[in-house]
Image (cartoon, rainbow, N blue to C red; front, side, top):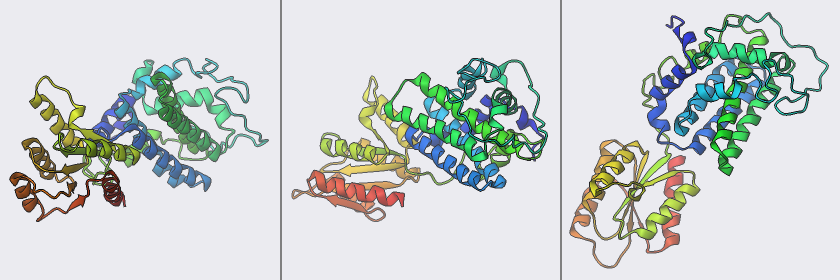
Length: 375
C-alpha cells in the first residue's frame, strides 16, 4: 500500500522509477519502435474514449506516460526540463499564463459547438507544491495546464481531447521520420505530455472523484515495479528489437551487409563488431560483448572457419538464454575442423539453416526466420 508519497514525486522521480523498471529493455530498443508502442497505447486510449469508458481510460493513460518516459530515456531527454522549457511562460504560442490564442490559430483548435462546459462536478485540484517548476509533481502540472487551457478544454468532448493527443503524437512521428532538429522534437514531446495531462483533466472534470490525481492512476498501475511480472527491473520476456550479428568478418562481408539491410528494413536494430571503436582489438571485443548482452537475439553467420571471437559471442549469448539464429553457407569443400566440431555439438540443440552462395537465397531464408520470431 502507498502512503501517498508518490504524489510528491517530481517528473524526474517518475523518470528514475521507469528507468529502474524498464531501462535495460528500452536502451536495447530504438526510437521508432518505442514511438510505435506509444501510438499503440494512444490508440487503445482513444478506443476507450469513444465509448466514454472511464475505467478503460484510467487503465491506459498511465501506459502513455510510461512510453513517453521510455522515449525520453533512449533520446537522453529529461522530461522535466523539456516540459519546463516549453511551458515556462504559459502557452508557448501566445506567451500568456492563460491562453488567449485566437480560434483556428497556432495551438488552439476551435470547437463548433453550442454546448456549455461539460463539467459535472466542482474540480478539486492539487495546490502548487513549490515555486521551482523544475521540481514540480504531476499534480502541479495538472494545475498548471488547467490554468492555461482549462476553460477551452472544458468545452471539448473526451474524444476531441484524445484527438489532440493523437495529433501531437503524429507530429512527433513525422519529426522522427524526417529527422528534423532535436529542439523541435523536444517541444513536440512536451506537447504530447501536456495533452496526456489534458486527457486526465478532462476525465476528472466529467465526474471522477475530486480527490484523485494523475499520480494515483500511474502509481496504481506501476507501483515501483512492472505490473505484469511484479519485478524491478522487469523480467518479462523481451520482444526482439536489437539483433547482434556475429560471423568471421573476412569470410562473410556480403552476408553481413545484407543481414544489416534486411534487419533495418524489418525495423530491427542491427549491431555488429565494426560498430565499435577502440585503441586495441580487445577494447572492441569488450564493447561488442557488452552490446551483445543488451541485445535480444544473436544472428550467427558461418562459412568456412570459426574464430575465438565468434565462439565467445555464441557462448555469451546462450549463457544469457538469448535466442540464436544460425546460418551456414553451403559449400563443396569441407569446413575447418574447429567449425565442424562446433556444428556437431551445436546441432544437438540448435537448428541451423543452410543457404546457397546466393544473396537472394540468404535474404529469403533470413526474412522467413525473423518474421517467424515475430509471430
